[in-house]
Image 1 (cartoon, rainbow, N blue to C red):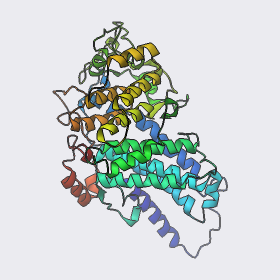
Image 2 (image 1 turned 90 degrees about the vertical axis):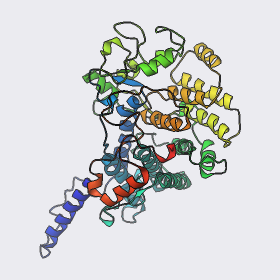
Image 3 (image 1 turned 180 degrees about the vertical axis):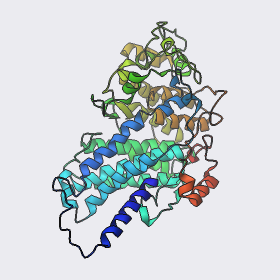
Length: 478
């Protein structure tokens, strides 16, 4: 969090400089009448929401779960990255969200803030996003500064909270947000959900459902708090593909889909053999068993068949299947955060846990159908596939969910780790020449600056959680 300290130093130095000249009245000589003196909550919200597009299109997790393989440069599929920075998450997103809430609460600024929508609705959206941020971050790094974070000079050495405490805090944040949503104007600057508070309610409840299931191995009881949170969220979660939650990109180069940019500059990603072969199944390289492969990727330009690049190796990309052109050639292709099939799979698994009533097989079939519909698979092909793949065990849910989460990298990676802990994870290739780690990464290591900035708390986190590397299993996956 060097950024905070640098800002604090600059502010302090500036104050000292001006107070040393306290006999001089500069009047308004330094006030620029063309610039705002109070931060715009709408602008802060827009800037914070831009992160969701980056998050939803990150390359690393899509490689971890072997949706993708590399081309000429295979370091990323060999886990070149060890230390991952969370400066953007804290300094650019969470700081903005906290500032929105502060401006909406402060008697001196809330009148101006109210011009950008209902104060309660602005705070609710900020709280829902804040819950998403801390949840997604703890699923990557594990223990993190949470309750004492972002206090700047008030607390330069925040403690690292446990994952369970972060999860509980995020559940409470969702409750707080939903409780204050009112019938007033929607927040301006909402580029994620277009200012629809109904959609924000669905976002919050869907997040709650996914979070509850994520910790089900550790908090499995039908009367435990995870089951309670699941049932609080399930009635308000998304109910169709029309409700899918995604980030919308624009056609201009500064705000377009990063996948399109990547393939403009260098075609360095193809579908991985692990994934392609699982979808070909008992079919052929031209007519795969799973009809979604024809929607997920393109036939090789050289061989005119569906073929996956060897994971962890260097590949001649023209010999293998690229991601569908509907993603890599479309600047406005949306990036999915949550999709309807996730909710139906969650219901199927919740029945097995004793959290929810219904028929596991029915929910399982509805989930696969939702995935087929999302990708516009022919209805007859979808029905044939579902008929040939009936539910038999949790292993079926794990495998089908992994297919349905295609290109939702962080969700797919988290669910693979959870299913790995349950002994039903889809099979992935364990490469023989990793740069870091010994297997499929279980987490991201903290930024290299973490021990320098907050050594005692960093050491405490490592002593509780485990080594600061890619192999340490997080709390919910133990």
